[in-house]
Image (cartoon, rainbow, N blue to C red; front, side, top):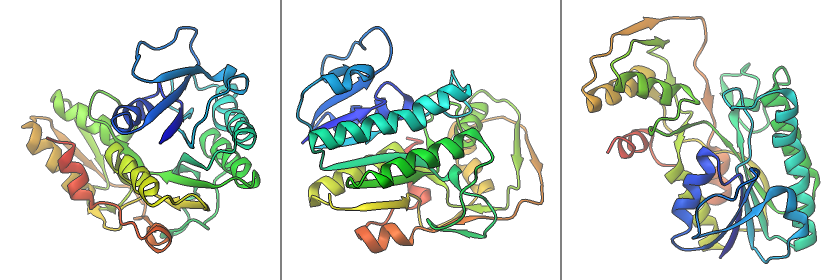
Length: 279
């Protein structure tokens, strides 16, 4: 299979490339002036995407600007989360791409419901949710085949601090103090790169292309925040002091019914996801 990964130099895109290149021919875009030093895949400067002629079957879009990005001014959000989607859909129409897998975020939702499904209200109060939801709308209106994955916090314990679980792990690793908010709350908004790739491979194996769907890509089960931290702390033999804090924030559950019903795919149990990243 020939796959184009947009945003292949980012933290998530680069790891997806590493796993998929073992079985597939990978093309990837980059925005820097210098081409990345990885000669096992074919690199295309994103700005030249429309000018290049090459055959690919599917596109995996990993481009994102969020609050922890190095460049996160409004123009960066617009260019990454909106304009790039317009460029990708236009390219896909001209080149008859079979499917776009778009990596979005559960941050698009307003947190005003106890159970959050794909039809819940969108939050337009911040740059990330607003621009990502507009990018999703471009994809939806393109009439192309797509699967829009709304991702929760993605585990990456190799030094990346862009979400709470990675920050917590790195603080524990270096025996720094950890402020743990609402430790008894149960959550299901955790995923890892391996699970994202497993789902993509599942789609490719079954040749599931003719979809126009947005889904919450989350495990069905929930786990206490305290238990997650205890698992990491014990694995690291950390001496970090943990301060427990409480707020009035209520538990939220992100529904996984749609991915099970549409694709007959059940996301791996949270315990297993965490443990396999602690090896």
